[in-house]
Length: 205
Ligand SMILES: N[C@@H](CCC(=O)N[C@@H](CS)C(=O)NCC(=O)O)C(=O)O
Image (cartoon, rainbow, N blue to C red; front, side, top):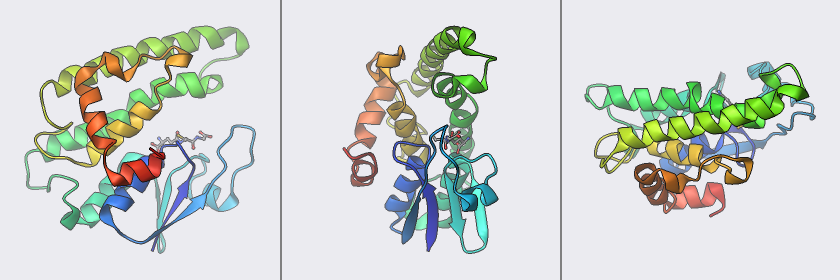
């Protein structure tokens, strides 16, 4: 059985949706991720960064949400959640799976984990303002890339759509982030993904 270190609303939601889509048995390990809270020693043993998700499968442990979702989709090809390695759509699929964790995720961190990125409280407002500006630029870039495509990658629903939806759940207009409605192509896909029973369950919709 898969085990997933998990916190509500976190980057572990994408991999959990993938587990639901696959229908594989799994167990969640509820994990405290507040910045002032101590970390579960078992989590730290597998990921000294102290963040979720971490996936366990027997002796195997891995972190990084995108890598976990790619791994699960490849492990369960019958679920048709990813283009096969022989499919030319595999290239863009990998691109759109990797990009969120190296670009938008960092822009979100400037809002939610600003203290990691600047020396003190006096820089907070400026860092968080850049976070909002970067998120608007990045979502604009993603939106243009999607254009009229039915899904994030080509013509088929994939794990990339699940992760696009997860990224959208971290947009907080109250914090000065743009609203997903500013990005109609992305918003259209996010709305479709939000109809799936797996997503409704995991995100409490
Ligand atoms: N690059 C990692 C980032 C994961 C991440 O930022 N997780 C957050 C929750 S969304 C977390 O556990 N934060 C606690 C911390 O950073 O200390 C991934 O994609 O899995």
